[in-house]
Length: 158
Length: 391
Ligand SMILES: NC(=O)c1ccc[n+]([C@@H]2O[C@H](COP(=O)([O-])OP(=O)(O)OC[C@H]3O[C@@H](n4cnc5c(N)ncnc54)[C@H](O)[C@@H]3O)[C@@H](O)[C@H]2O)c1
Ligand SMILES: [Zn+2]
Ligand SMILES: [Zn+2]
Image 1 (spheres, protein in one colour):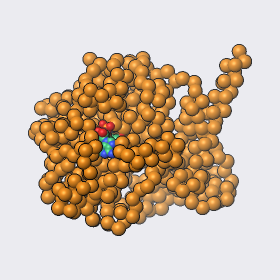
Image 2 (cartoon, chains in turn brown, yellow):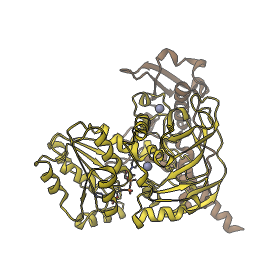
Image 3 (tube, protein in one colour):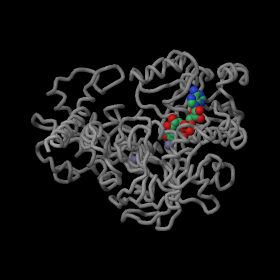
């Protein structure tokens, strides 16, 4: 009884670690690894505008309650900015929190921006789960990766 | 349904897994008739791309029959015989409108991993790990194909399944390399690697007007295919100095276009080989780049090098000085197949592009583990193992 429970909690810890690892990778600063070039203090980093470019004119993006649902759902907590992208690239859709966001808030914002872009460009949000798969052996590596993928829609450099 | 899955480093099993269902309006479900191994799978199998989970369905080069269509699908119909590109692209984003389909913004629902690795995320690929989207692969009786109007192409009547299959990945990748490297009539082109991808890059270069094409490898049966089926010249790097040979046959200039179709497990002789192997195993470099190095050194001044082989992260001893001082253009990409598949299928229909010889080992899906073993070991003259999931 006790052993499976310990394994289970180890696995949960590994899953958690996978998600956290991915969040951390974007702040690593080794040559050629990681995506951070200078040290923003955590508050500056959290408050930056996060932006996606959408292949539509700025007028077609909407404002306030007319924004795509995932962004509109964040309501007044975020400010949204839409500007024309240079060349033929459409509109830059950017958003940031008015208050200091938590890591979970930031994940929610990244997902919302990505989903908003997909809704505007292709009319639906692409789903991958449930995907057919065979037996998943319960290994620590598997759990780490599961944690990383579960969060990957809300992580990244956005 | 039955499917071939990755179950651990260099372990493939065939298991019963749930059937796929339509999840998005632009999906179709395909009954897979043929699906093949690709050199890219070897990098996954060997654990060089550590984003596989036990139970993931493998396979990204395939064709079949449409058996179910989503509400938003406009052009594909039930009963269509289609070949599908290995990369998943929406057809609507800026990258897709530039025909850079493998860079699609909307093909990878898990962009966090690749953004963290590379700064931006490319598109998604079937059966190619959770970094590339976590999409189930094609070594199965059925597969769900998102954005089917963009990625699934109807095979013309005169083209057999045996031939059409490779339009999915090997031919479209090779064609892209030859095209985006800027191959022009009169060029001399050298291709590293005589696998399915390298052979098709060579054939594409010929169809694009290259005057002479050389393919470099060491496996005699593949070099024989290059001469016999592709019509290019073969160079055996285990018996000759490749750089000297290429200088000799190009009047001292070097090839105008150099296409690398080997990838991160490149084999090399002597000290260089040992050095790269040790550094890769110690994780001091993630990839072994010997063919890319050689392509850069061989290329003529002002020439063009295209990296088709898959690399994951970092390499060591990269000849940046040669690249800069010789004024080279270096480019790489995952396959923008949707851009080339209609043209490729036309060439196939006219008999100018044949691929049947690549399928050296054809077998039921149940034998997938054996198929991967011979393909990985390059045993028994294997160039590609092809599985028939529905008999
Ligand atoms: N860019 C893309 O979208 C894309 C698509 C498909 C495949 N690929 C990649 O292309 C590469 C080739 O694929 P494939 O299916 O032909 O693989 P393959 O394994 O069948 O062929 C690779 C060939 O390279 C040869 N080789 C090894 N070291 C060499 C060297 N130093 N010099 C010359 N030849 C050498 C091997 O003997 C082998 O014949 C792989 O890295 C694969 O991942 C990329
Ligand atoms: Zn491939
Ligand atoms: Zn796209």
